[in-house]
Length: 509
Image (tube, rainbow, N blue to C red):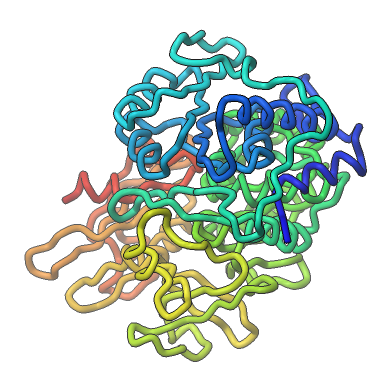
């Protein structure tokens, strides 16, 4: 039996060759063109000595060449290793060395830093893409020189369904990033099942502002859209004004984002001048979406926001609210087909339903990674008892809807009492001046940990730190409210738009 994830592209190109798959500004690419371009790229990789199972690192922003290279690597039977374009040389070196990458495809804008990392990892094979307006680079082969003509049958390696297709590196919340090995079968299932739940149609136009090198966009946008023959419009870097322009210009029907993106759109000063009537659904993941943001966005745009939950180790989607009529607002939905999710206590016992029974989410099913690349000890710890231990805390209600409370490692223990940062953040978000909020535990000689909040404000709004402390104190148990609040112009975000709490904790230690 064989299965190559790139078969999705071959099938969509066969069924609708002239259908537009990618929009980049004024440029359009059809499914037939993408299929042909990725064939040529695969042939070029094979000519360069890349063999089935070889790892190819892909460090590009949201441009059409990312998609061409992605499917070209898969068709050649090689393994895609996505790399964040914001990574510094030591981070690039770690991923290249750990994955055993034989080739790095990078972007001219970051090629200098990437080349340093490659040199530290002992890698000399570099391909550099120069995009419009970007600097030229002489650090490696030009991207456009890789594809070669394809005589005869196009390359499509007959991979085993259990072969690794992509190694996605975790964000490294604890220790160095680990490479989650995702197979062709897992990624196909996590395109097919969630795509049906998302209701993606071949006439949809899906906005891609999340970075394609992250599992959310890679699995839950790129793979899903190609599986169902939809159109993607690419935004290289999230900017609220640019996104609103693109939604209006391309009549976008589906917006997928993280909470900070939804907040930024609501805060845009000229929001009212855009025609956004084409939008039919918003999909949120990556972090908990504050209840007030859900309410405001749905009221303002007249579309439903469907929340889901997943992580790199589960090829993105694990639970999902499937529709406006089959959802539990403020939950992350129910387990998708082929996936089991339970709530366990510290002793490994299944907890009953109800918000009084908070425990760790554990997962098993078709979407769970094969393991961490080259890390048998880490794999054994994460997949103990045959279940993936997510490190996320939550509970399940009587109808099977899951609610995420917080990260296990972000739990604040203040004088023996458990404080869940998300609960405090949700209260902060109810203040009309607060745009972003992050709550962390800081060292305290008397209590062990104390609660501290960092916030940024909506444009034109003003509030004092003391007023925010009082706002929370009046709405939450006395041991939970933050004793200090620090107001900043903005909070640190990673490439996907998630607030990076460890940076806030490091400056408060």
